[in-house]
Amino acid sequence: MSRERYSRQIALPGFGEKAQEQLMDSAVGILGVGGLGSPAAYYLAAAGVGHLILADYQRPDVTNLNRQILHWVEDIDQRSKPASAAWKLKRFNPEITIEVREEEVSSCNIGKVFEGVDVILDCLDSFAPRFILNEHSLSEGVPFVHAAVEGLHGQITDIEPGLTPCLRCLVPDMPPKKESFPILGAAAGVFGSLQAAEAVKLITGAGEPLLSKLLVGDLQYNSWETIDISRSRHCPACGRKK
Ligand SMILES: [Zn+2]
Image (cartoon, rainbow, N blue to C red; front, side):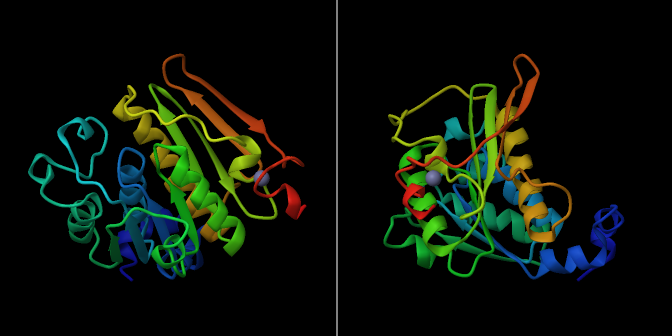
């Protein structure tokens, strides 16, 4: 590990060399390498997370470029989003390993896609794969950082199975899928960056992660609120496990 590279975060109160080693020994799965996944993966690579697994089955298109900052004009329709992101991240930080998973996650393959990871980031834009991730998290005991963004607003929370509400305590029924919705790149950048920070906090124990707390933010009106949330007895996913 190049200490110098990480010296400015090692100097953080409550962080130190131990936290840096924890990051280097950790594996983070990123589900969706788009508007949230780009800044999240970039900052986790910057922080020196030793192992990143990037999962997405899509290729970049021109309408992605206002927010999906790991994809460039030369990547459009040329390679998958994970391959496009991995090419840049490997050059940005050659000290870490990056694995590419170019497949759509299903309840059958998600265990294989994210085998051995310490935490998963939900960088998705629809709820069907989020529900698959939630089931995987509950059955395998893997924490994940949920975020969702639309327009200029978004939300984020950390889901630790058995400890916090699961995603379906918050969203019991599948919302209708939106094919395309407006979004400002900077809004995705804010929430993707928050996801990277939450992953660092969960791995190292530094700071206070958003456990049983939902942070909602709106850049249009500069309003931010942290809401206490609790498990639902009627949750279709974790209610029976109470
Ligand atoms: Zn639940």
